[in-house]
Length: 275
Image (cartoon, rainbow, N blue to C red):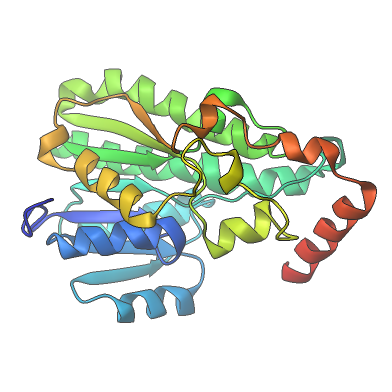
């Protein structure tokens, strides 16, 4: 589908790129010649990912909720050359009855998903503009930006904020040759998302999908590669949904309206064991 040298010589940073969707995108970009940089909070996870990829992969341990840590990471990256693209992938979410969320729980989601994406985007964009060079920022959102989503309200708020950033900066930074685009995935199973969004393993998402299935990571990685490539050079400020049309049928949370107190307690207990 793509030339094997599509991203040859290009440096791409993926936040939260050691697992899940970020790892899938990273593997695809490396296979197309990219020089990949991934960051995350867990050194062991990053090391395991880097060892599993055949290609140029550099890792940084960085908590993107900390703007000083982000600036330090970007300064270190730029010492060996500028980035060509940023993928805002790191995020946090879990299902909960919103009225029972603590401020700390809400901030844990907003800090990574919204603040982290903003810190990384501003840090990269500032450096590109100062150097007079262009670049691309791809943010991984969710279809909650279109439908809202009960029981994951902080995540829906954060993803919507990043969409607003994408659209706003597409206009402001477009004259500098900087594109901002987004992907709104539907159900693409990952261990991390499954633990937070389906802690009891009882939610049947495939049957709600018009195509009768969940997404394949290869499909999402291909879309990401296209949007980051020169072939998408005239796409700016857009967020593309990839969910089999599920958001046209359901927001993805209606089943939770029927949950019993016992089910919510079981979910909270399982989440607590993983914390």
